[in-house]
Image (cartoon, rainbow, N blue to C red; front, side, top):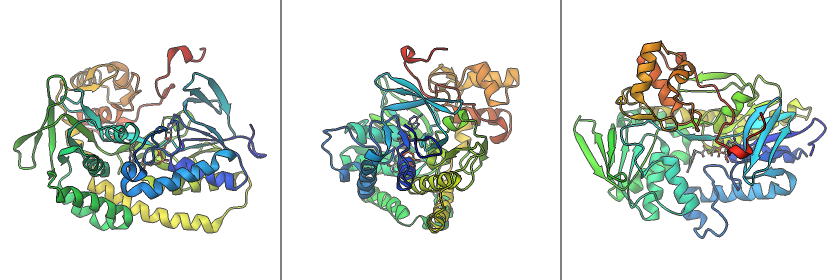
Length: 459
Ligand SMILES: Cc1cc2nc3c(=O)[nH]c(=O)nc-3n(C[C@H](O)[C@H](O)[C@H](O)COP(=O)(O)OP(=O)(O)OC[C@H]3O[C@@H](n4cnc5c(N)ncnc54)[C@H](O)[C@@H]3O)c2cc1C
């Protein structure tokens, strides 16, 4: 299926960024291929439940129900005019083709002339003793249980970490009828005050955050700042979280479910496989694909947008998706829509200020990550502890992340370092007394996510 004269356009991701990109392309008379591993469009924030799911949008998305409905119906309206491939994982990009595996087993290599990557983000976790106990989930995982399966991870749940999702998911759990045992923020309250001037740029999004906080406080949910999680304990599953309060005192909170997370990290492996160079983003403590403000990368015909190109939130993702599609159209000879571009750029500038506020208000817990006890499991896939990684760094001078991976096997398993990679980088930097940037980043390897062996391509 060819797109208009310039050849095939492939969009990977049907979240807010990918949907808005596809809509702009369709509006210009193009029929793009849109690939997503999820069964239905919407992405993470507007993840759609399976057919027959009875909970109304208000219960699933809360204050975002209107935006969710709008996104879903916008995407549904596009369906006759795009080549939509749901349930399809892009596991590799090679020689300007995306290699896909359908859930039903079919595989294909789809050549492209233009590629727009809108692959979103995933939870960022920091391991602590006991984090692999049954009943411990990421914040995003706990939310997916609610949105997609209609169940909670426990009856009495502790939420620990630092990110806007911490308060949002706690609120969603409480609304769904679970007992929220505590919301434990690792950031001190003072940083929230320092972030206030920037946070005000968030407008309605900031107001929603305040509402969630106020709602939880009004129901006397314990909310504590400046906390350090010490260990999750339990026999067959998590039974309590032991934590240190800002005053140095040790406390514990009983629970049968624990959700943790420290913001999000970009899902950027496909950009890496498409040979896009990366740049270090100090505020987000991660490497992101290099692109101009339109999402145009140095690789001709390859564009990145949304959270996969740096964490910015759903509203910013939608704008970035549209802007990247407009840049793509311009590069293919379409007349530029300058008025629309100016309007998008103005909104993006406001949201960038807000994002800076969020980065200040919910900082990554650098000290916690660098001081994880030696016997804590770091890489679940390859069963490597923090102590083992430290030993390899010391013995073999492994001050570069890929070197540390080669010796220790951290990041070499099924998840390809998507879960343990960020903390491994912090530990390497900490042990070498070096900056996070100087230890580098894990190179992406295909398959970017596990695929069944029987469907592996011939070598
Ligand atoms: C688990 C989770 C829950 C979240 N919940 C909220 C929330 O409740 N409220 C909120 O404001 N923000 C939430 N966020 C953040 C929010 O989802 C993002 O800011 C926003 O969705 C970004 O939009 P996007 O289009 O860039 O990416 P996404 O919405 O993440 O969409 C990316 C899409 O790309 C697809 N994809 C990725 N890789 C591949 C591949 N290799 N092959 C095929 N398809 C692929 C994914 O299936 C996904 O549908 C959440 C994030 C996560 C990770």
